[in-house]
Amino acid sequence: MSLIPSKAKEKIQANLPVLAINPFAGGFDVAELVSRQGIDILFIDCERAGIAIETVGPMARAAQYHGVAAVVRSKSRQVEEWVSILDRGVDGIVIPRVETAEDARIILETVRYATGARAKNIIIIPQIESELGMKNLESILEVKGFDLFLIGPYDLSHSLGFEGDINVPEVQNALDYIAKTVLKHGEKFGLPVTLANVKAWQIKGAIFNFHSLEALIKPSLELFKKEMGC
Image 1 (cartoon, rainbow, N blue to C red):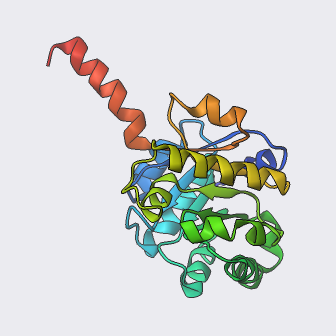
Image 2: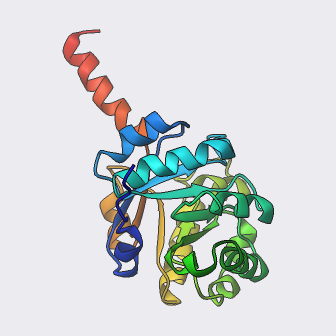
Image 3: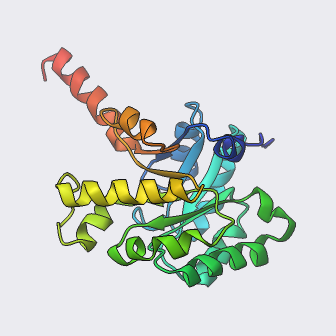
């Protein structure tokens, strides 16, 4: 299988928008189906979708065959798991619940150790999704070497005591604070977006546009069923 180099990291470095799709499912076939649709990043989710480590490699190859970057979200903050993911030839890694500057330094050290000369090509993304991560954001951002920061609105909402409601003013204000702080430090950010809010977040500076496959399919299916009368 001939693999096509992805341009996702180049686009991120150029501050251009990238589309990342999370299929929330494992396996070569689903990865290949999604990747041939002209996306930038296949978001392989070991944290929320429970994708097993032995599935990461085949999914990554399916994405890379179509010139799509394979970016994997680790299911934990365990260094050993990050190394195992990086050993499978992926293009990037997302680390959940980054909360301190020391967390950030360990991520960069691990990527350098695990990938050697390939480290400069890896898309490295810490996820800010807790009240503690938000409080320590300034010091986290002093650690340089990341491609962008991924904001997690739903987990942040839970951490702030709003049980997943991301629309309350307190959560919206927190999201705006994180976005503005990241940009103030000369860094880039992204977050889950919808068709209704993607433009608004791009105006605020988001370049990593994260969406689920289910959310893309559902409106089309509903429209099709309505047309069929069923």
